[in-house]
Structure formats: C-alpha cells, structure tokens
Length: 120
Image (cartoon, rainbow, N blue to C red; front, side, top):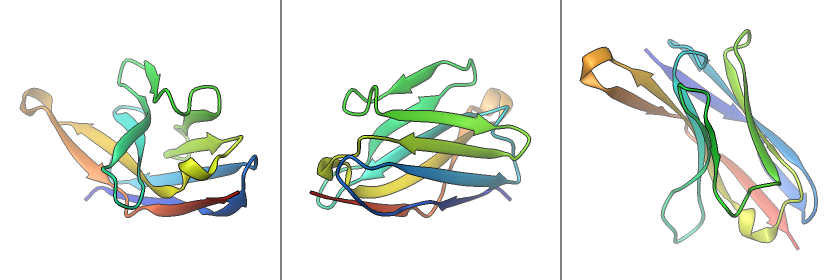
C-alpha cells in the first residue's frame, strides 16, 4: 500500500522560506513521477512543480525562480524548497506520486496535505 506523509508546513512572513517534505512508503520516488500541488481557499488544485520519470522538471510560472523540487532516493522522500514566499502562496500543499503500472498506465497517490500560510 502506497502512503505519502507531508510535513514542514506552517506560518511564515512574506519573504520567508519553508521546506516541505513528503515521505513515501510502498513505492519509490526514484522510479516514478512525483509532484507538488496546492489548493488555495475557493480555488481549484493547481500544479506547483513536478519531476517526470525522465527527470524533466516543470514549474508553474508563478513559482519559477522561487521554489525548487527535489528528491532523496535514499530516504525515499521528495521536497519542495520555497523561498521568497508571497501571501498568494498561501494554500494546502499536496505531494503526489504517480506509480507506473506497466501497460495499465499510472496510479496517482496523494498525501493528505500540509497548510502553508504566508502573512503580509
């Protein structure tokens, strides 16, 4: 059974930094696509950053140059380093692991989310 557990959220002032972690079990972050998404109050969930199985990295335009996605294969954990935070970054952040199922495509697993609040 695949489980993802996020940590690292909290409250920070604008301009500050936070690092989110997502520990995986039941599958590996090294062999699958990973990503961070967020959902602000009253808005739809949106992609923040992803690493494809090809190791291609993609960022939302709103976070380019401020956020960095990474993974530690030895710890089976993915990270999101967030710098120069803005009030509009306030949201619940979710990690996702897209586990390859061969010819059947992928199955997406989500963490329960961690709240990031940025005050002005």
